[in-house]
Amino acid sequence: MKGYGRAVAATIFLIGLGTLLAALFAALPFGQAPMQVGQATAVVALPETGATNIVSAILLAYRGLDTLGEVTILFVAATAAGMVLSGAGRGEAQGAPAGFILRVASGLLFPFLLALGAFIVVHGHLTPGGGFQGGAILAAAFFIPLLANPASPLNHTVAMVIEGVSGAAFIAIGAAALFGGEAFLTPLFGTGTPGELFSAGSLPLLYLAVGLKVGSELAGLMARVAGEGGRA
Amino acid sequence: MIELALISVLVMIGAALAVVFVRGLMAAVAAAAVVSLALSVLFAVLRAPDVALAEAAVGAGLSGVLLALTLRRVGLWPGSPSGDGDRE
Image 1 (cartoon, chains in turn orange, brown):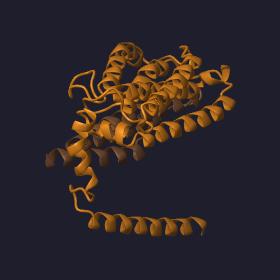
Image 2 (cartoon, rainbow over the protein chains, first blue to last red):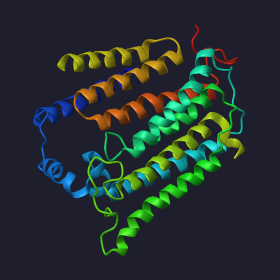
Image 3 (cartoon, rainbow over the protein chains, first blue to last red):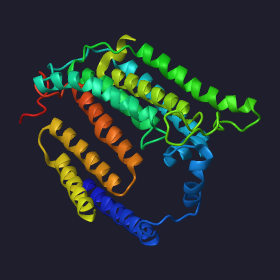
Image 4 (cartoon, helix red, strand yellow):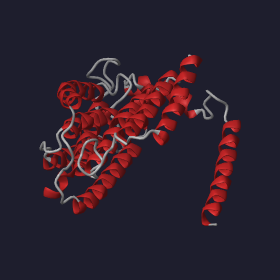
């Protein structure tokens, strides 16, 4: 009887969800922006910020405070998960050793992933990607070796220090604009020549802080999941 | 372009079904990563390279490694004494 009721409830839920999504997609024209603000930003973003990647310009210059909130949420979530996991993580890392392919490939991939992650973070204001994507790749570079060899030491005290310093750097760069009489997180140093590595003012510095923060945060979290956290 | 989008959607549906029906847990993790990878191709086709990069890095990379680490942590790693992830 109980299983029958659950099946009926699931069917009703699926029908409701489908109707809702169908109504949404019927109302939205595909491939057209429903609002004007996107087109307006696309026109003014390059001359105003000097960043050729308009997504980065929006994330850091026009919506910098939202990015700070996003980074804060990630920090709180990683801290909470780390607290839960470090309480439970008394056991040694277990399981059979990894196979030949994983062991060799993790060693081969490590420098390439580091280079790719650093490239994406540093070129966040020029090409697609940025601090969040590059930070995730940097974190992956550090724990693919962890997957191959669970006993390999990943010192997450260092990760926590990098995380704290880069998070503080983000806020310090934002606060530095206050001294010039501007609003919090206003881009500094002018726009430079769009398309060059040193351009777009303080946006690359902000993305560097975000990339280091996200990378160290995720790497520390994964080290805890892998069972190293109990000995912190 | 529309062909590439259709192919990636088909790959996503196939991989999502494989996640549910495949026997080994490690193979299910790999299939879940394939779903994200095909989704990132779809994002790239739809000209959203930033989102495609995020999906490939987080969806296919990080969550795959997280699931694999969890398998290792709970002892379901293929070949470990307490579990048999890929056999059966």
